[in-house]
Image (cartoon, rainbow, N blue to C red; front, side, top):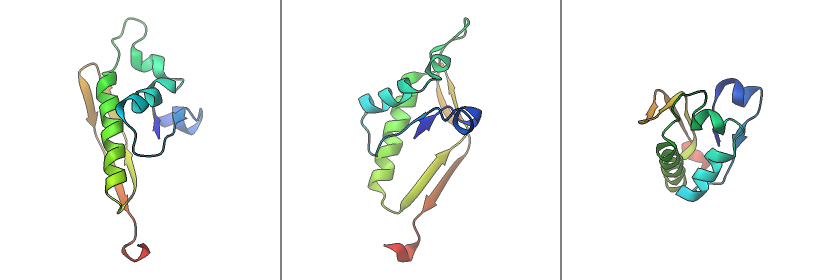
Length: 101
């Protein structure tokens, strides 16, 4: 799942979904299809976010989750996307219970 977070997810349900793993072109489509994409592109004279860095992170994270079968879910929030890359401030990784295999 990809979305802007906060009220954009909670109230507006502005997210895109795919089954992991996703390649870079599919991750780019995920980023571009949310309604909030114009905010990432830059508005009112503000520079946009580093879209290639977001795409790379979505794709790599999806491959990690697909490869590591012990991972049940990953939440990265907040992720700050600037014109010069991204910064993950907090991440939560939940593993499947050991006896559930």
